[in-house]
Image (cartoon, rainbow, N blue to C red; front, side, top):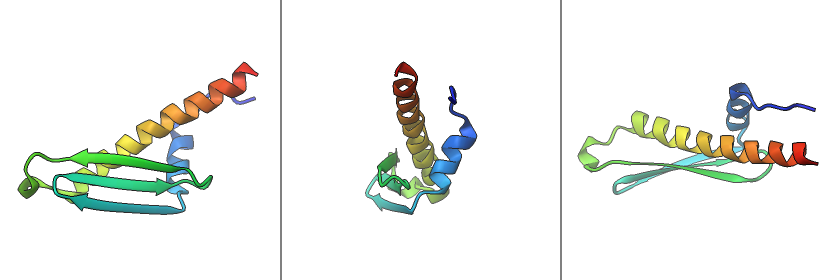
Length: 84
């Protein structure tokens, strides 16, 4: 049984997402990833002044936010498997 999750595992899950959408609304950027399982991850980023918004930076922050959530979810899933 695999007892660890790697960054490669997490990156592959995000790369294999069946859909990726993003929307910028006012001061917030929301990125949605639909994983192969159908589960939706939502990453966010925000800016104080919309005039300073940089899409590339915002997308990286929102992507990292979603990636961190996936780490937590996969860690929880693995812990459940190991506890059996």
